[in-house]
Image (cartoon, rainbow, N blue to C red):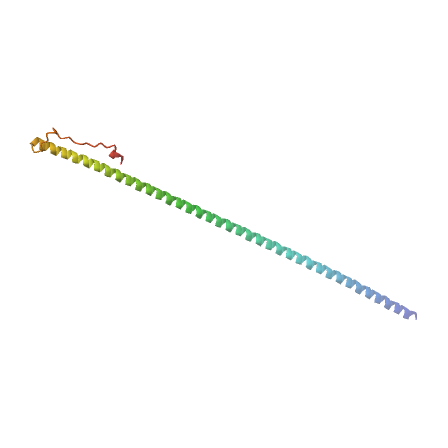
Length: 164
């Protein structure tokens, strides 16, 4: 019987040892699974953080590009406005200079016409006076007892033709 008791105890011990081994293996498996889960969570968090960083960089790049585009458009618009203003000012100045030239030419024509008329009148008066003098010398002129000699009318002008 002793041997039977020993066998029983040996079987019991072996069962407990096996059970403890299984428990230890279970604990190790659980710890390994927990470590695996934690590693997966850390990797997922790193992946999400990297994706967020990439998205933020992408958005910042887009904002910078849009700001540069807007600034370029503003500069182009501003340059176009300045160019248009300069062109308009040039047109206005050319128009004013053309008007001043027309007015100056008209004044020159008016003054020249007046000068020519005065000169023509002087020449006519001098020719008439010379004709009368020749007729009078030759005895062909009308005898006018109240007139002893022919007078010529002279016009004076205050305009100098060199000023035109």
